Length: 159
Image (cartoon, rainbow, N blue to C red; front, side, top):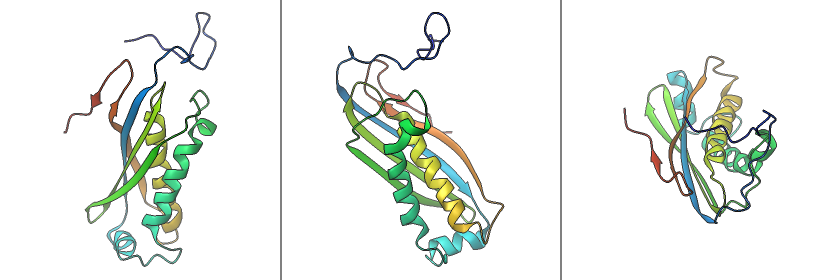
């Protein structure tokens, strides 16, 4: 396992110095799955949730979260993101899959931004639907793919 880069030789926390890294195109995709009651998913799908269009509000929350990642994760670098997209897929009668894709030309990757996007979008789904379903769960927040930088390309293998 590679050395942990967020600690110095004495074990103190630090932000990684990326000043000497070359600027390259960085891309990451992440996903989360929200599990709900069938009737809740029907309300979301049919856009009948009283608070509004769950997909669009959650999409905006996810995109906005990418830009706030360094405010939430202490050692993340602030990045001038170039692209952030959030999409939704109804998997079955109780599962909603959220995917985020984020990119930047920069010195560090955007994995945390992509994972923050799907987490925030999932929490927004919960917030908008909690009046009808308090048993919802948000799970499987995970990196699917990343490109760019010294570590190269990573793609999660399909189950």
